[in-house]
Image (tube, rainbow, N blue to C red; front, side):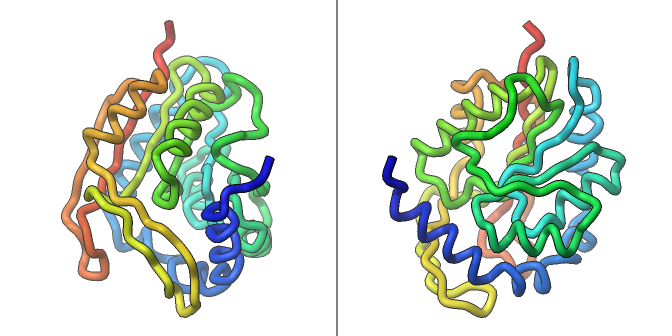
Length: 217
């Protein structure tokens, strides 16, 4: 199957920016208490899932949030579309497992995870790919497992041609929390919590975090 042009462009863009992305964002979570609180609550919820309790950081980038999950005691690993980002992740966090892969077709067994983290990793996806990714989240989660999705709030597509000091070709989708919650529900994942916070000085829009659970029945 021929890969969509925007997927190729997204991979190439992140391959290009990988080293500077890690340099610029490595310590970002330390300044974001509400973001950390959502991740901490998600980890605790994921540990209550039936069966396996590993957490997949899907769209992990250079692994900075995967490392944070490990620091919280989670059995975490990362998957990302960009080989360049994965190469930086493996070099920076050698004690963690990272693999190249797609969120729309995960190389993971059914019901094999207690948690799925999507930390701004759906922001470059048009809605049909978002639907496919959420279906994959449902498939790989064990009953009682949780997904946490972080995203930018809005209702538009923004074109980025420069980021992290490099030329890129990226579409960024801003979405409403209600719309994203509806897509999660359609995939069989029930919303259990949400947080919408105002933008930090370097952010342009409010930021949202949705926590959803795969029912035990």
